[in-house]
Structure formats: structure tokens, C-alpha cells
Image (cartoon, rainbow, N blue to C red; front, side, top):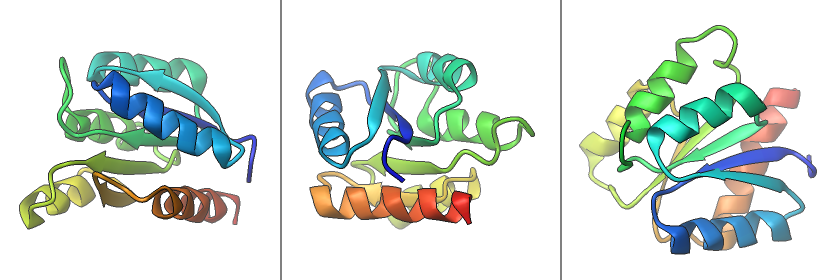
Length: 126
């Protein structure tokens, strides 16, 4: 589904711009946040179709943001893809346990990112 609104969250402006460019090239509308608190507020205010979430964030980490959204009836159906440099098995397990729908590690190939986004959006639309 293109024209889907995606919330991209990363504390690195460089990474955020790169992610945004990839998503825009895939036909998505992108909104951004640079820390966990802003991510939570933006997700609640904007109701994005999907969230791309970094783990290591200022204020609230990505795991906490994911958990808070996934355990809230109003937001739990929003797919969350963790996108992080943390590639250890334990980090991945924690991401999945907190409710992440997918876990991608940086640096991510643009095609892989777009495929994961499309896959999660398709699941939501049935």
C-alpha cells in the first residue's frame, strides 16, 4: 500500500534522512521523530500506518516505546519494525518480546527495508 504514513524514529539525522529517502522512493509518506518520547507522542497524535523504530534512543528506548504502544488497545495494531545496530540474539529477542513485528539490523539494504514495510502493511490490510 503506497501512500501509507510511516513514522521513522532515529536519533541520527543522517540515518533518518537515509531512511526517509528510501521510504519516499517507495511511495510512502514519512513523518519522523528523534527520541523515544517524541516517537510516542507522534505515534499517538498521528496514528501512522507503520513505525520504524530505532532501539537506542534518548529519553525512552525503542523497546519501551514499542511496549507502551503494543500494550495499548488503541495502538497495538500498528506494525512496528525495529531497525537498529544491535544485532545480538538477546537484543533481537527483546525486540520481539516487547511486541515488534520485525527486527532489522543496520545498515539495511533499501530493498530489504521496503520489502519488510510492504509485508507488514499487507498483513494489516489482510
